[in-house]
Length: 398
Length: 136
Ligand code: SF4
Ligand code: SF4
Image (cartoon, rainbow over all chains, first blue to last red; front, side):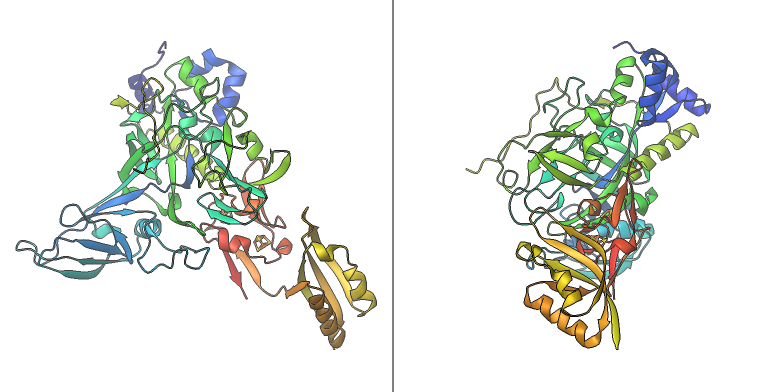
């Protein structure tokens, strides 16, 4: 790949307020008009965005020591358990965690009004949150019980750490059974009455860098309205999924582990969500800048909704039973019209991820870079890609 | 005394063939103004209408509908969409039977038109952001 620009050169331009930055939507028409060569020379950065429920998210906290001190063994925030099996006053809350007295799906479908994701949203909103902890007591940490109220400002440390975000592509959920089902893909009505998808398509970060040539460990990003970093590849990262000629995967494929200081994030881009019959989660806003270092990198960012295909998967039978296969592929251009055709039937579509918010994120990141506030970072290591043999295995019960 | 009410009738395939509106007008002397109707391919449907008539006739009309298996609910509950809470995801727009909650294309912005809402409550239950509320 012939590099025509370096990170340093782009950052110099950003500092001088001279960088040309456009969103992953805008770049499509620019390149159409001006051609690949000219556009590569002219445009420095393409910004992407996505906003949707990302269940593999959570936050690490350090509460500080009480007097007398305590080795917190069990911790609850607003009644939602946080994992405290780490150092004395550290804990991790996962966004799908529920209060112990939540009726869950006892009366089906459960409503899951409040969970770990809502705790994170409340903290980021500056709301007071009830902290409870219990312990067995030690000579150095004698306290056994604690109950108080905290706000995000009281925390010594609050790190959003999401082991799996920003799925490259995703299934379209449908239901072939004759009963309504309640899934993480939303409510799916019987006899293929509706279908739900969850991707920003042409604006989505990993769609614009399908082989992870620029997005890697250490990439500085927009996360939850603040600044974050790519920490690692995400859980279930699976680069060897089938791909189209242009390299766009036709299934889940890549994922990212992301982190950032929760204290500078905003509730507008970190929203606790309740998925009826399924559980609680957090909708996370992610935006990633792509430096246009070469023509090849530019060409990847020209991906359009009509080039991106997702498999229609039956969440009524095949998916829950772990059976492979799908009911065909549909493009995001089709999905976004509000109707798709599945096995000859016209089916209405709904979306879990928000395209207007994805657009807003890409635009915000563009503004940050153009104002010289946000410099790009070169990854310290690339993510595993198609050259690496990593695959996700099913769990075999022995 | 006359009554004038907005109601939703919900019925299934067995009833689709029956001339229920004709009966309401002819046998019960009610004035009906159909605001919205839809029958899906499985021949289940709903009908939103304004019914005007004498109290007694209205009550008898309701009784007749119930007797043939049509459910009738008053539209005095109201659904409100709280724009500031809405994440603009569009999950509800794939479910809303009347397209009261609608995704505008190509902007992909979600909007709500209260007049089209039949208070089926699907959105109230399924909105992940709890951006739609039911009021009485
Ligand atoms: S499901 Fe809720 S959050 Fe999503 S568009 Fe509808 S009202 Fe807005
Ligand atoms: S209650 Fe919600 S889903 Fe039902 S018609 Fe009204 S807006 Fe549509």
